[in-house]
Length: 125
Image (tube, rainbow, N blue to C red; front, side):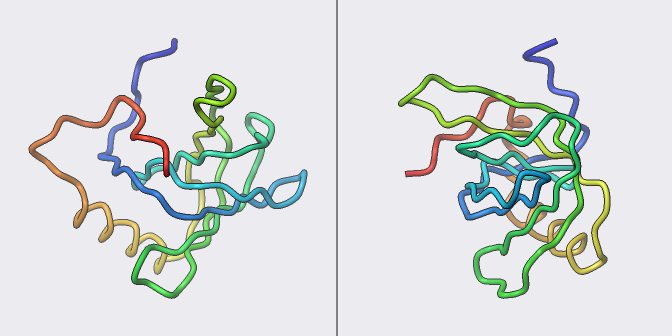
């Protein structure tokens, strides 16, 4: 059912480094968007659907690393040379620091005058 957005929480466009620790090794990517329930990450290689991943990143201006256990919920493939491929990861477990920090980031950066984001933000430059 492509095109239907099942998210219940606001998401915010992001553009910073994200590491996914997978059964195939560590994949380095760039964050696409984030909500309190998950994250979209642009990657060159995509981990298997439904696989467990460790998600690691730091928000700009915050030195401490966020560490989360998640599950790969979907892949999106782009056109070669135009769009990078990306994955959607659902958050499953995180410590209280990570949860609080993500909540504050979303609250600070979400523009409630705009509708919930249903299309991808622009690719990072």
